[in-house]
Image (cartoon, rainbow, N blue to C red; front, side, top):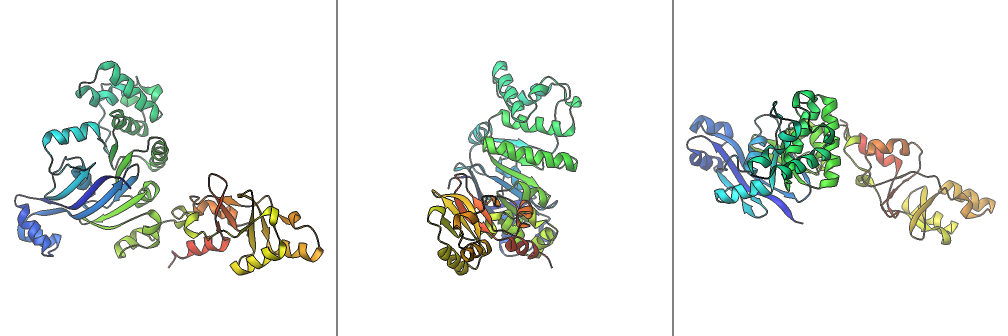
Length: 392
């Protein structure tokens, strides 16, 4: 796997004598002890992470956790006290000023919490402003700015002014400004936190939809765990300058690393976090053309299930239940006559929340891939077991 960003043993100490504080930190002294002894503030300590190309990597933490310091070190706005930050193998912590400018110009764009739009400039001119500073011609920057506005759904508002837009629209202008430079990496520092909850939720979904198309590498900073769980392919939780846990949404909610993470996750709706694939079992299936009642019943007994899927030319085609198959055998009727063609189907990425209506039917839920191949099965009881496992 190619990693777009790597942080190795990253430290940031704020103060006039960071080396003395760093030595104490490495001796095991706490952040508070170091401040009392040296008046130096530990911002980030011993942080290590890797961001894969094309993923959304979310850093979540409360105020003072170090998350904003961390994102500013990634693009060189803050220089680390110690450690490495590699962007495509270029260490932005130690590279030359010219190399850093090249990385910023060609690879990285930042989207901030506050829109910082120029009120006297049109939307398209706001989006094109960074391109103008870089000396790009008027025609090209207009074209690129217009394209970026189209990507965020504001193409028709190019000649409007910021005060004519809602807060959500203004934030989309800020996002378009980042996209206009055609970066490989987007750094987003709490970009939606100033928006009301409904607009914030809409923006999260728009970002996910945009990412499905553009496949940027995104580092997203937030203080909201629900937002982190919604957006992140990988999530790191910070506290006191340290990363206390890194993992997928399912790993963090299902296996919190400590009491701090447990406290954050205890009220999370697990049905919106866990996916069908996390509770799936290997498929129990048989080709419809060779369906044999005795063999099918024996296979269901071996698997301990009361339903089995059937395939046709290798693709998912139907479902037989133990009860229906047994009745057909007793009556001497055709086995093919009890194959159900109307049966619950989902994908491995379906949320448990969306499995509820399927699980209520009491039938095993088939997990199908894009080619229609049976990839796994979810038993209705497994859905409720997973959701109840998070309750005290």
